[in-house]
Image (cartoon, rainbow, N blue to C red; front, side, top):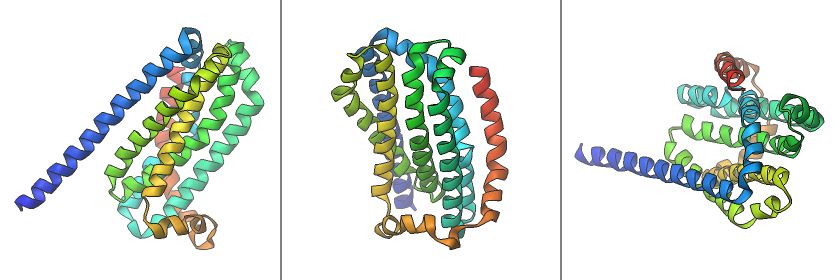
Length: 248
């Protein structure tokens, strides 16, 4: 009994320690970004933040929370639930990505009232599907009860982002504030790539080998799972959208 308590305590302390390190690295990444891209570029980056939050809420559609909840309740449906949620999220993300690339100049000039935000708005088109992918991978781990992996993935995300900031973001900032803001967005996208790679490499060998088969196998096409996911995700999305629009 004592051994079990010690193991639980060690696991909890490990998660808390990793979460703290992730927060500190996130703070460091922000400080480095501000220091490198200067105030004007940071102003542009701050200007697109409400739009970024809105688009990310739309692309995720509340599916990460819905997916992790249903996987925890129905572990025998893990593949079907994950594939259904991933396909819905990625489809929405690609649609938003296309709309951003078409409407970026209009959004920057008319909605954000800043022509300099055009490049950073284009950058959001790259960020959205990457966030959708990493969020769904985290949902899979959380649903299976592996919270430690998702906590460590945050460290991988922020570490990757810091490496990009230290070695590459000055290349963007030297070209002007518009490019500096774009570099900040790309840095976030690179962080999401690092997080997704960590979660992929952390998966069991069989899961890594079969992951692409999951997506194309007809046996995982289950409309009932998609309906279950939407029943949970839709109210979450509506609540988040109200908050996002208020923020805008």
